[in-house]
Amino acid sequence: MFNLILFGPPGSGKGTQSEKLITKYGFKHLSTGDILRSEIANQTQLGLEAKSFMDAGKLVPDAVVIGMVGAAITANPGVYGFLFDGFPRTKPQAEALDTLLSEHGTSINVVLAMEVPEEELIARMIGRSKTSGRTDDADPEVQKKRLSVYKNETLAVADHYSQFDKVVSLNGLGSIDDIFNALCAEIDARA
Image 1: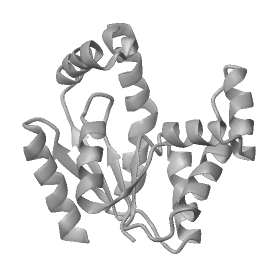
Image 2: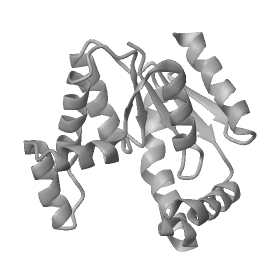
Image 3: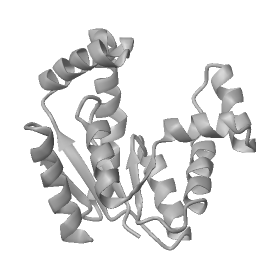
Image 4: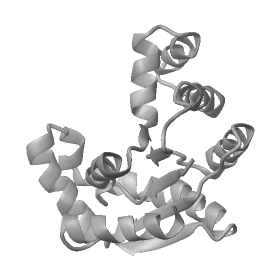
């Protein structure tokens, strides 16, 4: 099983590249947002627990999110591997994911980190707001806050995996196809 984390700040192109990688390799896409919505819609025990936190305006605790990720892994035993997009977001989540994957006899193979300058990220998010309906992308203050959270909390995930020599930084500038080909080259070198 081949597992990867597609990593980068908001606006770096993770969503676009995830779709292409899933199509090419047959990865099972694990997005915690999608998992949360599915668990809530199916009214599972974890979904109901998550909904109670969300309804109270609180973040869903890591233990609940990890439980949902574990359920998704268990439910997909025959996949080529998992592509984690937008998760883990913190070092404790990364450590919990490592433990969970180890319990399933697997691990993260590579973290592909897409590097994009901040001014380009903001321009991309403003452009995305015009076509995606995501009004949060149009607000520069929201963008700055998201980038600050990324720098202060999420970059620790890359630091965590760097100690295991699993992080590959890639230039997130260029055409969609050029970036995709660079991602594929890194996957193919490890598969």
